[in-house]
Amino acid sequence: MSEVIDTAELGEKIVNVLKTIYDPEIPVDIYELGLIYDVFVNEDYDVKILMTLTTPNCPVAETLPLEVEEKVKSLNAVKDAEVEITFDPPWTQELMSEEAKLELGML
Image 1: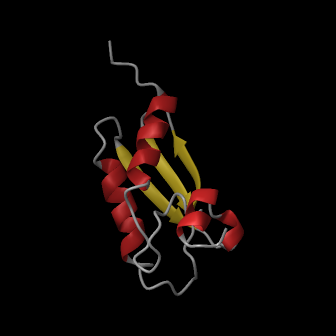
Image 2: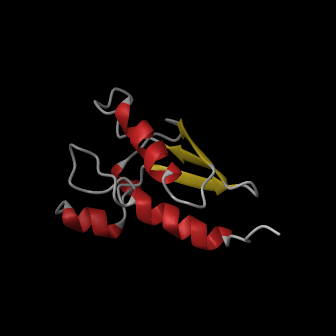
């Protein structure tokens, strides 16, 4: 009998990990910045993250998705993690959380 993992709880853990990853040019984590569009967890505990970058030619376009994958994979319950980058819809400042806007002096 395998241990049952609460996917909602796992989702929270994934979000907490995402909140430790920062865009190097903006002092706000990628979750509050609105770069994470969706997080999927299947019954095998494979995680797929749909995210964007602030611009298509973002200087961390190569390294940021890898950092997200590695940090999410480091969670015990996660079997595998994959990051898919999309620019549809393109990122705008409207996607930022109130907390991020406050941090950047936009409120």
